Amino acid sequence: MSAVERGRVLALVLSGLNAVLAEAKKTPPEPPGEATLLAGRGAVLDSLGLVSLVVDLEKRTEEEFGAVLTLAQEDSEPQAEGPFRSVGSLTDHLCRLLGQETA
Image 1: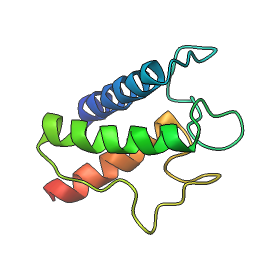
Image 2: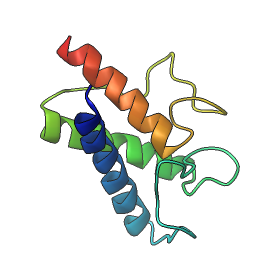
Image 3: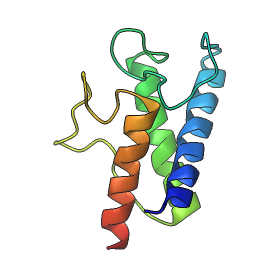
């Protein structure tokens, strides 16, 4: 994906995160960005919030890019350095999946 497309994916992830946070009536200490933690110690989401974000992003990805994706796959590790650790790692994971979808 080009940098512009990654920017679109990042905007999609941040939009989804903000929607999940608003629905849960949670306000993070800082505005969400690429370094915002989604899983593990210091995360802005609990496990239910992370599941909500994944479902929301699968829907948004289909609407925005016309691609039906499953973000949580068997080889996706939700802990430590997995694709769900931060906004940036989730954006990269989604970019990889979109690249496979269009290849």
